[in-house]
Length: 327
Image (cartoon, rainbow, N blue to C red; front, top):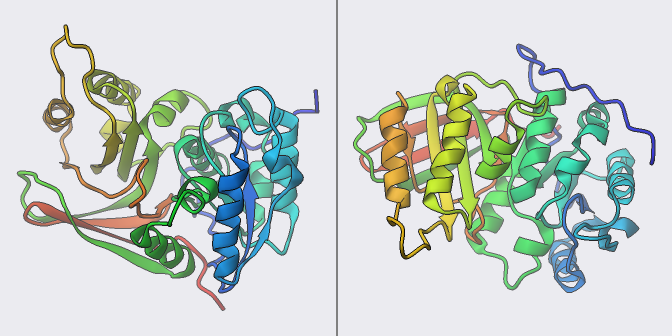
């Protein structure tokens, strides 16, 4: 087995976040495959989408490798990824797809090398583990957003997702205005560090060096294909681990196919999960943020300051300080 890379794994509390460069237009974009096998046809369509916009695309040979469930062996996935990190021409590294696999190699990624590259990194689902570890180990701001083969290579890309993707990565500030969110809270404004992603991955990393110690944050969460009772159990794991208590707001995205399925059990619903969370937590729990395993999704920074504005059954989110402003 290849020698395990040394990576800083101590949380860097009190240290200013390390920011990627704002995305130029056009850009040089690298495609990484750190998790499951990638469908070649979908990848090719995603590459064509990026090229049609004038971008250059770098795809390591390892991206289309396959070994068991994964896009190549652990060594192959690491080699392809570190090659993208070390390429000075690349502005953005985007995950080709999620699935499972990052947990196998978190301890072998050179996080200071990643943060020192100045690149932006984006993905969702299993890529939540990357975002968590990058911030915990090197204070690097990364992004929860579309993936190449899934969102840009699987039919016509959603126009809403495209708009928010390019604007978030290229501008020093961005807004997500007035998403519907039924609630009973008084109007208020909450400021905090934006962070989160897929609930299963958040709970999976609790108690590890790859779980960032964020106080006073705005936590955004999504999930797919879990029963509501299991969703509640995952949230309680984060609560008992002390992570939920330290936040200022919880914002729920899309919980795709998270429905009760056992006809002989009580049909515990997501509405009841939300009710439980609102009873449990001393701060607003909002719903309706457009992100998750859906086509119509926003791109969110992980580790940058944000402001959540709560109105009458709506909410807005704005953020800045997530990229270095272009020269």
